[in-house]
Amino acid sequence: MRNPFGHEGVEVQQAPRPARVVIADDESMFRASLRHLLAVPPSVVRDVYAVEVGSGFELVGEASSGEETVEIVRAAHPDLLLLDLSMPRRSGLEALRELHEDEDVTRTIILSGTLDKPELVTAIQLGARGVVRKDAATELLFEAMTRVMAGASWVDQPLVGDLLDIVRALLQPSCGAVGRQPFGLTQREREVLSLVGEGCNNREIAARFAVSERTVKNHLTRIFDKVGVANRAELAFTAARHGLVN
Image 1 (cartoon, rainbow, N blue to C red):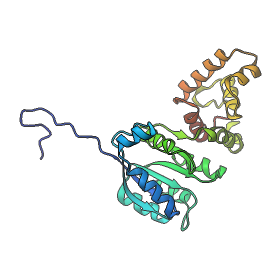
Image 2: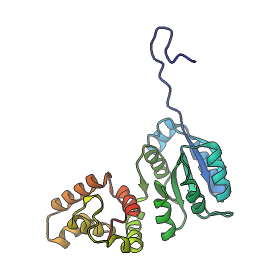
Image 3: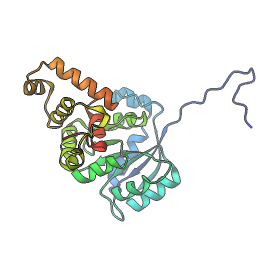
Image 4: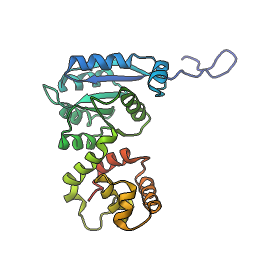
């Protein structure tokens, strides 16, 4: 057995390794672009894109269909899966549904070319931790991968309102159960959350309830604390999983 300590009894610290990534997309040119980005050294990412990515990323597999995605993820055991939902020979969504049943669940970021509303909510309910538009700025992709690897969620800011709107439309029947108050949200907090989903800013919410913006901020702070999120993007993901929006 290898001694984890040096010759003088000092413990040798293991250097953090890059996050191991699988790309799943049927567009070869898009995969090539992602392959190039994943190979950029962390110091360059920091200097050029102003994003700290730790030890960076290592590409360990590519797939061009849902079928290949399942095979490669199960063989390579990556830390992170960049997944397009629209692929041949079993869609990305079908692949995600099958991988969701595995004991070793891979963190997944959805690469969205177009916003298919039902598919997006289903993907989040199956454990996807991020959504990034394919035309998003490069630094946003690096930020999303870093945040998801840290255990957080990520969704492009322009999609937050859409996502909460999707949740409201698709999950409303399940939210009407008598006495059900997920995360202990009060009625007013749920009303605030609904207005956030409509795209209202703090000033507009304050005007709707005839209260101050400070009061609205206090409501949002309590909502974030109860749900266990840090921002509206993470709140959108949690809302999608639990049907918090009326």
